[in-house]
Image 1: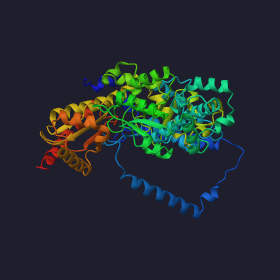
Image 2: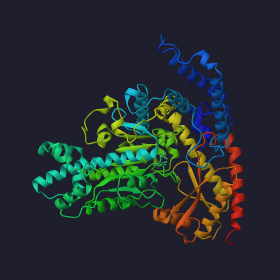
Image 3: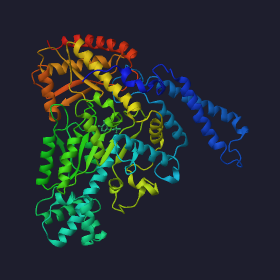
Image 4: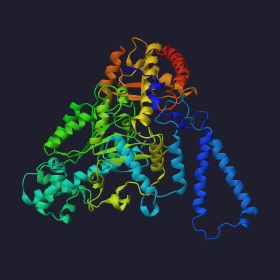
Length: 594
Ligand SMILES: *Cc1c(COP(=O)(O)O)cnc(C)c1O
């Protein structure tokens, strides 16, 4: 894949208008916006009920007590601001550490404007405007990932972790609805029963069976593992299926985020039922392994809560073959087996803004097809507080349609909650801020999540990673770049020719330690364990002629999220400095273990 001139990619858009800048270059624009937001906030109050009297009198505001307290307030605020000066400087192009950069101006302004009004999106009663902004912002994200925004549903969460939990919550309910109905029917008819087949019967078969048997809601409820004692229901399932029922499983790729393990704990699944699909030698979900696991679940008669694929892994930004997962699950569907597909696009969802244009070409073969298939998933996690450049805490959960969204309850799955507008029944979180929705809304309205705007920006970050990778490969003798890299995250290990993996790991850890003590560039570290990344670790060791004598691969990790680093003139300054620093440290690391 070629390296592009950033100028060519970014031709359509002025990214300079959308961020404050590492030297506060856009301070005037920010001041103007903050003034505007404050003026609106003040007027909102002072003009609202013109007949009401002030609740704070001039005399009170001039009292000594007031002025002492007011002084205390401002002194403490200054102390806090002073403290914050020591905060991690994530705004600079020198910051390459984590999935974090500076927030965009539209996101900051939207966040602040909503924050001051402080609506609670749990219900329209306490969020007349915030709830509407949320619906519109979710529609923007839905359009970006290719969902039909007229049908798609969703809401903002505090992050990707909770958004992933939202998926498990629904998907588990979904199999429970079907399993309970199937169990009641089987107990009545004494026909052969399979928990797997019953749980995956799909909505159409579910509706048919419900009408045919006129199963009373009471009977179905009394067969639900969610509503009743799951051990007792398991006994009934065992009796009916004539084998010991061991409960459902959740299939995730080996590259999964830690939140999936948390989900297993929280939803009482037992980590045994979190099935890891091993990765291929490029670090992506292996399709053969996935099919083996689905068949294993079928053989053991264990329903699959969901198959999870990842768009933009947390470690290396890899994109799973989502299109192939979709085809495989579609095959099952044609045979009456409906399995929930969740795409964890917490990091990579925003790369969909590049789709449908020339920009796709910057992606490696097959990656744009994978991103395009997200639109066929049942549910998706996206984190605006990562590549959306929105302030924390802002994640989003979306489903392809209403029925998938409302699966998280036993009550009236057909109620059109979109019409009611109250989300509190269908969100894991109770009270919810509107700030993230407003930040996303204003970003969509200004930067636009289309190819000629946000898409070009995303492509420029991928290009920056590519330029760094190329420079390291050609100019750093003792650095081994991890290939392939699907997006804007760059990983590399340190070592000299003939090193074994364990020596290389020591050198990489040592160089990371040197970077940690050095304020000039901030990078992060990740470790690929052989359990999950066996084939990728082998491929990396083979490519760089390392003997495999360790169970892990240590990597230094750089996330290219800074909006200005891809600019030619900025890159020209920082790239040589980074290369020099890396070579200097790698040199020192070579003296280890000799
Ligand atoms: C970051 C991330 C998450 C978790 O998101 P939070 O917002 O940190 O809770 C989940 N999945 C993936 C792939 C991620 O990169």
